[in-house]
Image (spheres, rainbow, N blue to C red):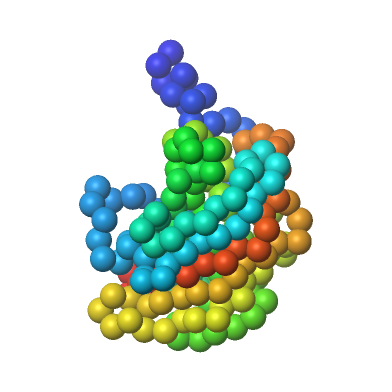
Length: 182
C-alpha cells in the first residue's frame, strides 16, 4: 500500500505524450560547475497550469550543463524558486545541435519544466516547437564553458502525466556547460 501511495504522489501513472528529458540527479553538495557563472540568469513568464514571473539571478539558482547522450549537443539545467513561493522549479533544455565554442540561431530544442518533488512534468512533444538562439558559448578554463542566449516556443508545452498545458514566454538565460562531463 505504501508503494502504491508513493507512486501516486510522484505522478507515476500512464503518460500521455513523449517522455521528458531525464532529470540529472542532484548531488548532495554544490560544486563549482553547478553554480552559475557570474551574471547567470533565467528570466521568463509562465502562463497556464504554472503561472508567474521568473527572474532568477546566479545567487538564486543552480545551473549546470553537460553533453547529451552519444555526444548529441548539450543539455542545460536551471533550478530555482517556484513562482508560487512553494518548492523548486526546474528548466531543462535539450539542444542536440549545440556545439562547443559555437554560437548559433534557431537550434531545435526540447524544453522540459519540472515542479520538483511534485512529480509534475511539462515538455515539448518533440524538437519542432521550441528553438534556442545561443549568443555566448565560450571556455571559462577549468570552470567549464559559459553559455547564454534565449529559448522560445511557438505553442504551449504539455503536462506528461495529465492534460494541463503551460505557455512560456521567451526564456533569457546565462549559465554553464561542462563539456567534459560524462
